Length: 219
Length: 216
Image 1 (tube, each protein chain N blue to C red):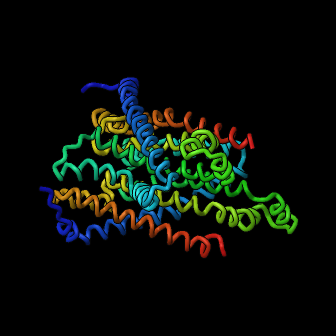
Image 2: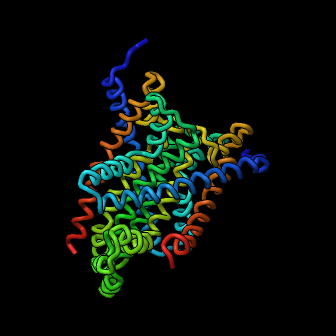
Image 3: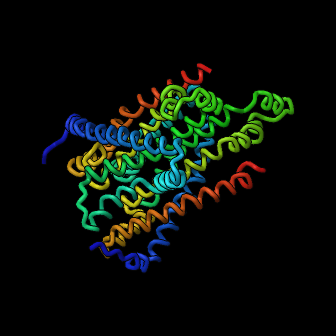
């Protein structure tokens, strides 16, 4: 009775491939900016004034305790009513950046707080400025320590980006939905898209584990 | 046109919170039971179970929860199985939760030192007794904080059930936003309600963790 027709889905491979590329592009953009935001917030939470710490702390808790889909809907559907109109792609990247930034902040902060006191004192006694101490002595080993957690978080954000199809960003889940609405092969379309996500998440993990020591924190 | 006050919006959202809570509890309890069964099968070293559980965990952790729900809801019904949004959401979230919990708990069991296993088997305890009296209590202590922390992920995960049409907090928010034309206020209220649900759990998890590390 059940007849499966994967061919009907696979002939739409240009759509699937474009969707996967869009998912990767969203992830790359939001990972780059989001990690930057995370580092900045981690600095603010460890070195900033009490006021700054409070503001960043509130941001982190608000994001970490609400679902990504609500954050995305708020940006995409909510902001236009106060006059800020965003394109689906921009809203998606913005939501992913804001989301990753909050988690990255906590991850980087954990790495920073594990810095041995002596290293900072040694750097200061070599007449390095506070900025130099942070960017050259504290940050690289901190990132190295927490890199596995960071990689996992980036992958969680990439998988979360499946929701962005709901505001018509044309990524992988959007492509799967489009295909199944054309040929009614929902079972096959979602199996293939899910497997593509699985491959993407394994590949991105490999790539980041390889790239981290080479480009982000040295050695 | 009917005018909706802030209280009208908030009150209706508040009514929807219970479905988010119910779905979270089903997923958490069901996922916990399946996760525990998988964990025990792994510890008992059933032949061939290790790669199966590893693949199961990889599958659920490496693919979007949304895709899993789509698959259960649209995919299965296209094959002729009638699956309601309720069933699809409950099954999807339960399986998703079980994959994460079994992996978290495995780490906790592994954190119990090997000597405890050896000592208890030297005392001729069988596997059930070892788990019940020696390994279980020690692993449980380590397991509570991350398990409570994961509950927050489950509550947030239920928001995705809105996409397949299960009427919980997010879906109700979308409906109200469409009816009132006040998406800014509505989604802010939705986010606030999730925050009210999740933040105390986060704080609880954090205090449990602090207590655990304080003991050492």
